[in-house]
Image (cartoon, rainbow, N blue to C red; front, side, top):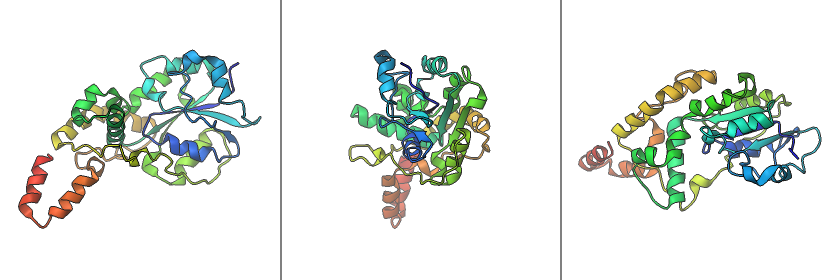
Length: 268
């Protein structure tokens, strides 16, 4: 039997889905299942409706129920959006977005850990599909727009706003909920895992290449979300590129101009 699901937080990964899930679980009008990511409509479709319904069997009557599966956005070239639309045509879709640089770097780190190897960032853009695809937010939402009207879709710049309650109020308003001021915790601590690689060192030329690859998509998603074009610092000098190791090393070498200059040249 198909469960009642009112909204889908489709991700993508590394954009704050876990934090939003943790906050929304505290809302008295929302039921978020104990299993945060059912991933039913892409990875677990063959398990059937009974398996999916088990995730919502404890949902109190009268509450809005949500599915927080960040893989749904990065499955945009498959049948995920169509499956959701056929099953829940009146559902609301929430897409979380962030600076594409931060998203790609974070997904590179996760992919490197999962694969047990590190490759250059530019190489990963073609060999590790998730690194680039998850940063192309407008491409992701386009497939959902083919099956849902824009009135049922909300793209929210979650991570950039941190604990600013404005973001959470926007989500609650979009879902028609009572506005409740709640903390938005940094719930995902995977970037602090001991085995997760640090940020890659990306030359300025490779940074420029990446920016050229995502710039058009980034401008379109900002326009779609109603955000100014300069909402993100999409530049080669954006601080999100640099690893803590590089910054600390540069600081230590600041007293030696020659070595500091040498380090700068090798990272460009």
